[in-house]
Image (cartoon, rainbow, N blue to C red; front, side, top):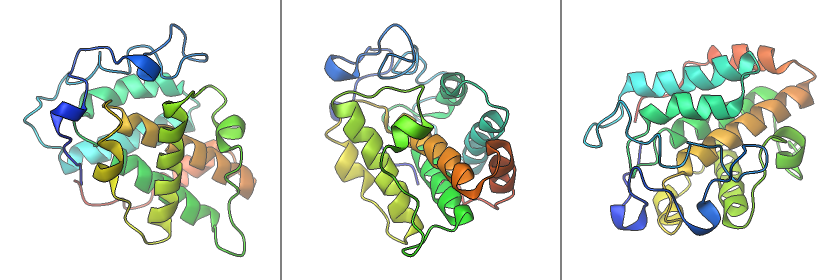
Length: 206
């Protein structure tokens, strides 16, 4: 379920975040891709509209279809951005559950865990995170693992202090890294992993 964030803790739609969250000119060197922090928020979805089951399915489909055809993940960010209501964690929860599905498909367990050390460097090389952005990404990675293990992370308590409306992007990047890592561990192409994950029935909408 999407969690609505108190706007006092968020940058308003259309504003450029400041400090560590300010996007840099190019995607590979920047903390986030151009136009994925604030500028795309709210397009196509009024702030008062709650996410629907179709929105959840659409976000999931864009991620899996795009990653399966090796699309630029920053292009996927901008395709998904209109589904994100300002000051809300959606569709971050959708991506965390896709990441958890990837762990399940891989068969991760205590006896055969999926190594998370260096997951960004190995499976998300197009992204460079600095400072707080690295903490945010790590939180999304661990939150997905918690879901796979049967624990529900407290998203609102964590993201309230971020002061940026970008949790859903962190969750998206974590899902990409998990899918690639799971495919690598299983010795399968990412395309095949995405096709198999797409067959998962998914989850009720937020």
